[in-house]
Image (cartoon, rainbow, N blue to C red):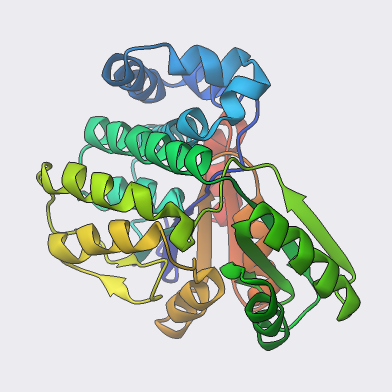
Length: 313
């Protein structure tokens, strides 16, 4: 394969799941079958069947969606490595919220089996925190960060995803988010969309999950990343095991700085972003952040088999 410009792998987060995801990877690639088999064994139930057959309402539940998306994303990566041994290594890896866990597996911090266990625990703890103190989230289109920050101050809500210019996400108590949605519209937001989630993710409402997650993380053996991971909360590279541990805990209650993460990688010379996993959400966001970089989406068996064409090599 011809030499490429500097690339980054990026991995999607919750909301990218869909019934049927990963089935063609499982059918066509032995490496993907091995990943699904590991996930089923570690979790003690047929996650693979849930991915392939649903039901959708069960797949959408936080404690299932998170390990499911991670498994399909990592199966995509392994299938690409099987199909194209010269597939280029990245200069950086990053993932959106839950996708940060896929990134740490790709960077060698944990093996896949440990990572999918950790993602399941994260989803479980976030679900429990959401049940204990119900919250909601909403995407706000067309307002500047400073405008939405004022909305949040007035309504007791939080900006929790800075995704790209003109697309921000707020979170908090349900009543507060409802007020914030109305106020955002009054301030000129052309579109405000409630999100189908089970809690106020990336806010202090997730604090009950923090101590339990910290205890789980401390019980695992992390390795230093072999590839720098761009952290959700700081948009800075993580290069040590300890820094990764701290990021995973901090991430639960703090904003996902996705736009700044992409801008940081571009500033470091990345010119091509490869999204690995279900959906095309991150590809769309990156195109809105910069028109000067290339994007490649690898989410199914056909894309894996066409990877050389997709990369133009």
